[in-house]
Image (cartoon, rainbow, N blue to C red; front, side):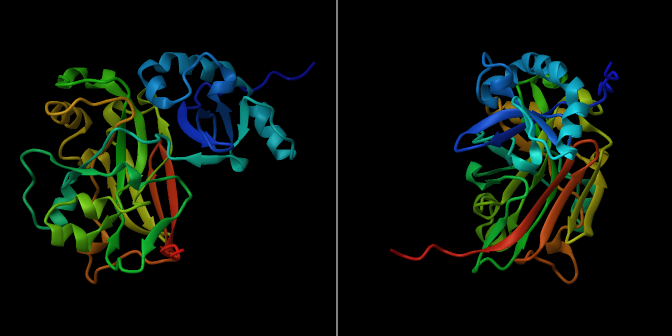
Length: 318
């Protein structure tokens, strides 16, 4: 008789988006190596996260059905065997940003106490919001591409919250009902554009300047409102930023309630909650990204987002 498999009741539910061809597909990461393709596991489910996020109970049913086979799948991978669908060998699967084309990406400036201190600025009395174009999103492991003329590009490791259920004027005590989960985010910033424009949109929206992922961890797997999580950003292995989400001036529930007073939040919307102290522009001497660098954003109990930095070359004219 085969031995009973080890049951991974403590494995967190991680939401991913993959592609095995041209179309993005929602899935689950059971571990760093094993995933599940949701449309194959349950063809009755919608085929995109925007429709799935408001009803994660059905997704959890699929997760609970398949997570007990995690050890079996990992043994097959170790043996060099191919996995049969709905299971995915994540080493052979392209992970995309976990959310594809959100209706909006909202970021928060000056929201860590240590970031305000490094600028010798008073703590803000209300959240300072700006937007990033959704075209900035980049997949985990894929490059941050710097055009030749961008000389002052910085990286900012951040905790991002993803909206699950739509809402307008959400009361602070009801915010938890609207959160799908949390992910790592890198708010790559063209400082020259940011400061010369006197507003953030252009400098914060460069293509590939919004690495996100590698997955979304659901709230039930984390401390309430993602409080007390260590957050680190490394360039080429060197720690640039190291802090804790307890340093947030305006925590997640405050941000969601505040933002939703003015705009309806929709499933898949990304709120990047701000960056800790240690960014390159406020160092002496200043430090900026260059081709050949690697940036890693790590958040405790969520994961690690790693992206190389490369030179973007304008396509030759026809």
